[in-house]
Length: 558
Image (cartoon, rainbow, N blue to C red):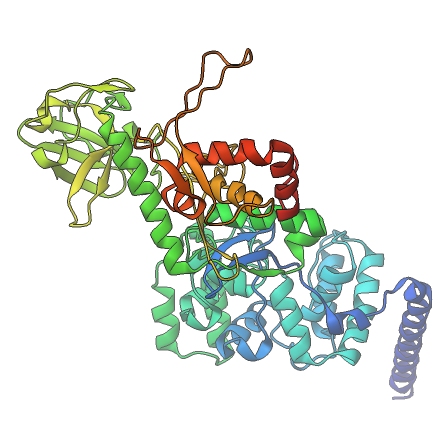
């Protein structure tokens, strides 16, 4: 009995010594790393890297610029099931421990001992991940782990559990450039976090461990397995019922990549904004500080302007004739949709023009449209397609049936008319631009710099050097008014001849009507856009005086 008592006392002494040694070791470790620990106060007012977003004046998204897709979500906006799924997968005792889960840490230490000293990451809590993500490297060293533990304890003293979880869920990388659960919901499902199903929530909750390989786009099967783990943990912790578990487990695992939800087609304007923001703030700040730029664009007028420009360019191009198919391929002997799709692989939809493969052509043409499937073209769909000869001539022969212009194996572009019918089309050789300005304040309310931005990023509205033509006449007449003319001043609308060695030929300018009108008041000449009056006015006041007036108005001297 006395021997047992001595053994018990010895054991207690050893335990006490061990505890004292552990405490001493912890104190020593803290004294060692404390000078190197950063302040966690910055977490109270953290600024996440959020991309630049450009909007119309009525709040429609034009574009998003930045390497990291992030949509910050407050803790209050996060659904309870998302919180439950994340904690079940990553840290089921998150709301109970003080930042360090000593039970989990002990398991990790024992696991490391019994695996021959191999370093493993086990035992990390959500708070420890916040410490690592915001302040530390991802190096798997003992020193980093010690710093992580003490930082986590500091964070828990400074912030609430809700604040810590909000930081974590907005910071973590979840694959495909999505940072945070808000961006992940958009990237994988095109939804907000509050629109996600249980299956989608569990999929996202399973991503922090390996976002590049376990996501539902790159590897649906691995995503399915990870989702099953999250659902099982949620069931074990009574966050969901068995029926909810089974229903979510049976849902499809694959997802589709969703880009930013652009609500308005205005890429030329978006690029103008991007360039100005980079010039003003620098590339890094412009793309990461979360700037939201509201333009003066009116979404309704912008859509109308884009449609009007494209329609005008297509109509102009069509009047100059059909230039033939984009390419011609040999069709397989039997109907083979896979082969048809492969034939169209090198061709993309441009604006509202879709690449299509002609399968047969006679009184009607049977076509396969990329992604959309089968369609038919009738005679009215090709009636415009007189053969192109040169820029000034088209063939007199009007097509009477699709076979007159199309043959099997042709790759062409088609578009859908307003009545829903498909019609033959082609990429226009001509380009153009359109700008609409509010007369009261000069605000740009609509702008498009070409037929399709993604085919040609050159912005003809602001980058092209164009002859101003008659649009310049009001400034000439304004200069005249500033130099003694009045609206009632008479100027002779009569022929004038210019002979100059610098000219290739004698220049005899004319009015658009090819008529002369004699003495004309200045106001009438401006209203009627009379060329000869404008020329005589400019000669009368002098080019130098006109240039000086234009400089005062705001024109660049160049």
